Image 1: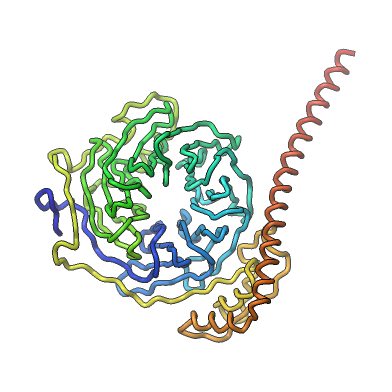
Image 2: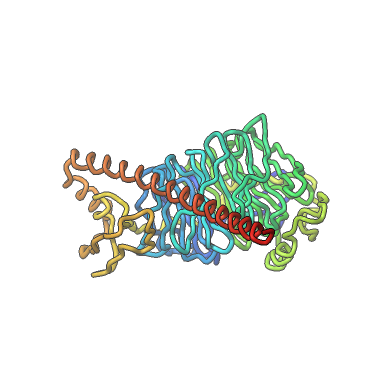
Length: 483
């Protein structure tokens, strides 16, 4: 367990293992709620599900047609949401069958997905300058938020679900009220834009990862910049709060991870393990682990070690702090709890590659899972691995996004090399027919988006008409009373 810039300490983080399986840069990582699995997304268009149990199989989910930009487990762990540059969002069942549902409403690449804490809603951010909210119970689009003037890179729910924070290349960070669907706050930066933004665990602050190499923490109750860190030499691409709220980890294009002690307001660790830019980082739900991924196609799994506090107690305390009444103090933003860094003055640099360590390498057998859903084109019939005689059409059925009728599809042939099966299926379809089908699907997508917009406007019109009728009824009653 090497540590440079200071003597070895028991609470220093350590690299436990790394996973190899993706063929291109890692864009997003997320732990399952029980911290037994890790989901990763990549430029290679695939999602992968890694079991942290040694020698367990990994699953590669095939379905997206372009870069997968974001992935997240639902709070209960029964769903996996993904966003892609192919303009779609997918919901997956995270098992060996990999059933999925495809949602289409954005007109540009989708950059992020995020579940609400109760799992009832999903928020997505897109390069079409919009933020969209989806109902997970009915599996349908609810409403859009439009105020950004450039690509929206990230959108996240607050812990209590009352707010949404978003960041855009228009150099603004916006806070939205989910009740009235209005922008209620706006933070702007003239230097750069935020690549990533998130709420702290108690919901009183937001942190932004800046293209100008900075990390900023704002108190949303008094609209004040609380902390400003410039510890990276390149753009900061992602960040993740420790569940205690005491620490923040950041990932940067300078190839490093940085861990900030927010109680003391300073950098405590610099982690070197990736070759090239690091695009994503995430703590596990309990904070005992964190994972990172980057341009080197590797996923690194780290053990935290630096906070031995009982996170469950802290999370309960954080839930009691979800209010906007009291005026905050800098030291009151995060729970005042003991931590093992009071005597530590210097920053510790950890580079696992500089010493030979007992590192567990993970190259588990990878099983390809081909997705089937009722909204994809003809090539999808080659991407189906349901059980025998099982009709999965209508699974995750979204009435506003998929056709009403869909024939059952079954696949009897089982093969170890699914990619070969896919290639053979694609070669059997003439290129002209494929192009024609793709053109038809594009036109259908446009129609679907138009219908969704018209449906939303019709709902608004109905609400306004109802209000008008109620007002007329009140006026009529008042006139009758006067007469």
